[in-house]
Length: 178
Image (tube, rainbow, N blue to C red; front, side, top):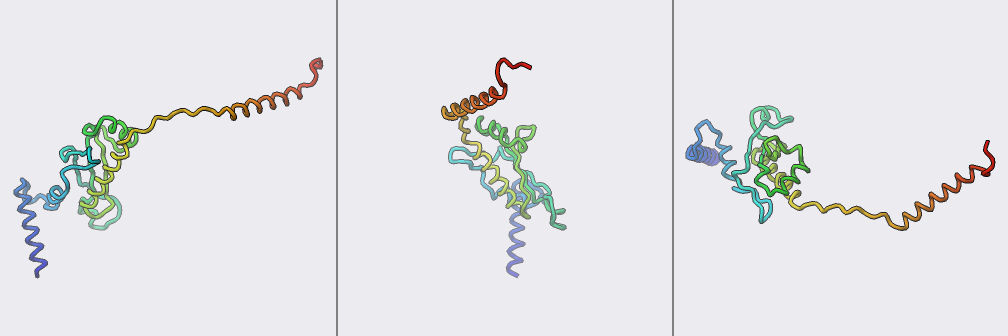
């Protein structure tokens, strides 16, 4: 009996919190909890954070098997961040490295639907997004063209001379034209 009472009280508090936050009785209380429970900023590094206002989260139907659950619950998550809020070099490297994740509006889109929980999928999508941005923080080292070693150059020229000598020997004497 105690567990049921606790559950009903918790759902009542969540619904009341949802109503206070401007929701309606028909809005889903768990969506409100997901918004409230997660951090206000996506921390990429100590010096780079993406503000919560720049992050858009959308819940979608997950793909794959799952029986009735997959048809009823939108547990898949799509996290979108405008590339414009990132430093300019990072945005260019993201566009070059992950072109399939960028849409026409200039947003980086990361989706996760491998778990049965919105919260776990959201955390997974945000973690993937953070890793993608971290991978593009450091600019790649410029490629320095390598020089052909002198020994290789000498060996190549010696092989050409040997091949030319073989061909000269096949020609025969200079006076025999035939």
